[in-house]
Image (cartoon, rainbow, N blue to C red; front, side, top):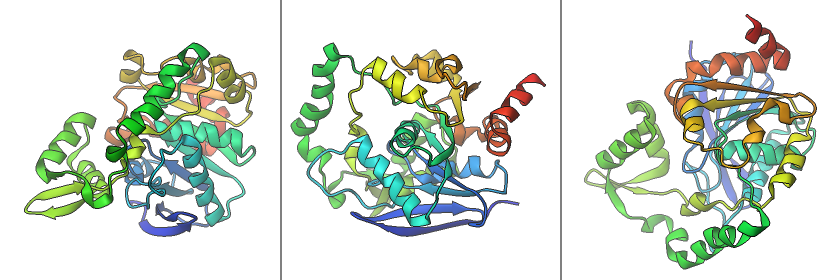
Length: 306
């Protein structure tokens, strides 16, 4: 039997955030954080494959899905998005919780873990390809990629919600399925959270364009290694083999290596599929996630020996 799904809004300093819940609020909480240009609904297939004795909360990040945007004008950073995660945990009054993040969401989980030490009981990264280091000699590239790009294309990134270009719904669905490999039902559910009807079979995208240019703090490789591998939080990293083969983990691949963590608190698993394997084939990830949720690293190690 499928877990019952509920959806509502919570108040945050800049407006409202949309949350999607599965399960009972009496059970231990698990927060699910999506990547760029996505929404909490992307976790629907995976949640239905996971243990029933947890309370799963998927969020729409600011400017994504049905959540309100941050105030217009300036670009926003991953640090802003990390606070949006904290705003959700404050609403639910969670002292500790499990964090599952995909892509950019995984980077936010890493940042949240060091910014709010002790809050995460477990951290699960799903194909975390959006975290990379900036060495001092590369600072000009980083600055130009984010700030010059943003202000050179200011009108594009600050486009009002009702000013986005209009596109055929069928064309948008076809593009989404081709680009991400999503099944029909999830492609439609995703598109509906990104857009609004514009009449005569047309739609208008509603997501905040700034989510495509989330500024990541320009940390060096050594800085990242020190702050993100020194934690003791139990962690599970699940990689998609197609992302690995494409070299998408850039210059912080050590974050996906068990030996990089002095506390030996990280386990890495690889599954067949692309960057959206958690949506397309959740059954490939679910056994690892379920074992980790219920039994921690010990359960993963025992499972690996079988």
